[in-house]
Each structure stands twice: as C-alpha cells, then as structure tokens.
Image (tube, rainbow, N blue to C red; front, side, top):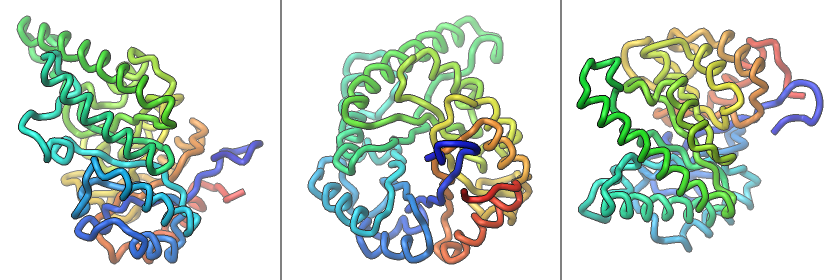
Length: 293
C-alpha cells in the first residue's frame, strides 16, 4: 500500500479480537469504520464462526465492501480448526492421516479467505521442537529435523493451493520456540520458497523475549503483516501502544527502514480502546517523523 514513490505509507487496521464475544457482521464493521479504521483482520474466535459456511463469508465480503473497509487478514487458530473433528491439526505432521486432515482443514481456511475476496491467513501453528544444539539430545535432533521437514513440505503444498485463490500465508512469531522467533521464521519461509508465504511480527509477543524493532529488521523482505500491541514485558496484555514499555519510535523507524507498506494492524482486546485507535495511530506516525503522504 505504498504511495508509488518516496516513503512507503501504512494505513490503520484493527483485529476483530476487540469484539471476540460477538458474531461477525455489519454492525461490528460499522463501529470499526466509524472509528476511522481502514482495514480489518478477522479472527475465528467469534460465536457462530464456521469454516464450512462459505455463503456467510460472501455476505461478510459484501458488508465490508459497502463500508469501504479493506480486508487484510484472517487469524486462524488450531483449536478452532479442530472444533469439528477428533484429530488435532498439526502443520508439522508427517503421519499420513494427520497430515491429510490438517491440509484439508487449512484448505478450508483458504477457501474462507477466498470467499472474502482474498488476503492473508495468519497462523502460529508451528509445532517444530528445539534442535539438538539447544537440548543436547540426538533423539531430539531427529524429531526436530523430521518435523521441520514435514512443516516445510506441508506449508509448500498449502501455499500452492492458496496462490491461485489470491491468498497469502503469514507465520507469526510467538514467545516460545526457536522456530517461531524471527530468524527461525525467515529460515522456514526461505525453505518453503513460495512467493505467497511471509511473516507477521507481533510486537507484544516479541516484547516478552526480545526487542520488537530488531525483530522487524530481522524479517526484512518477508514482512507482510503486523500485530500491534504493547505490554510491560511480563505478560501478553494487548495494551494500546504507549501503555507498556515498547519503544515505539524504534519500531516505527525499523518499519520505515524495511519499507513496510502493509497495514498497521492493532490487535487489542478491550473494546473501550477502539475510540482511541485513530489518535494513537496518528501519534505513532508523528513519533517516527512520518506523515500520511
């Protein structure tokens, strides 16, 4: 979403996690639009969310279009994908049955995103264990190599299904597991070698174990989305930026340095924060010395 010349320009987005206890629909989208939100990420936590009801998502696509809201992404979760079956979803599975089940469920998520008009699906289902040099165990090393190999193969197959449907896949960093740290995500994305696979940096997750600005720089060239929120460095609080300890000037400087031109997407949990998002966004843009055009 760059301006075609000069600096890349971001637009303001928000996750519907703000309203996770309410069904997705036009009323919710209207509240986001009225608050000055330009782009949204849907989450599958909402009551009544069902991956096999594509007609519902086609209606939601129409609602978003009528309000001129851009759809950035859909954040999918293993427990929601597993809701309709007995087997657990595992993108790092090599077992034929689990693998087939997992890919079928993820294809269902891709179909939902396609029905919504295309965009990004975000996942942190990266169950790759620590390598041997971290746990000093040959058995652990074999498991690490097997699961990492399976993850890359499974994600590559999923990416092939998603690409012609206008869907990209973003791997999200978390505060646990080397494979989910920025360098590990970049290594996985490079091995998958699919143009529609990238990384989302979650600033709150990273702040629990490292520096968010450094994480942004580490994934340069692969960053396709953001989860923006703050905390005190102890718990995943999903606070409005400025209410925790993250150095937002450094984060915005890093985003400018890597020429990120995607959505500046807030992932907050308190509905009472919504009226403050527009002003907070403008404050952050000013903090980094950036304008909107």
